[in-house]
Image (cartoon, rainbow, N blue to C red):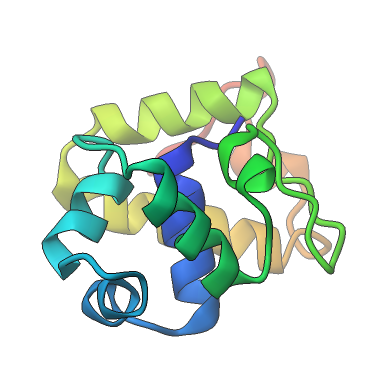
Length: 128
């Protein structure tokens, strides 16, 4: 499931606008948008309606835990995906970059990787 803050950030980045620009469009500061995205604050209903209008969606879509957009892309997360995100967040930041690169490399070249390349005989990840 995708949180409200993550959804606000997703739509904003998709529109290629800054927090400050979104704030100006809906009548709040860029810092307020940052607080919404980080879920330390929630917009009032009038601001929420304006955000939905800027994004070309409705308030229900912003508040639901799934997004069905024009690409019909479901942003809800499976249990495994949530576990992966929790693990990623628990590692030191200096390792997060290499972890992202590793996952991206595998996802982009999955047809060239054999399970034997990254897993040992007991299905444990080979780390060299």
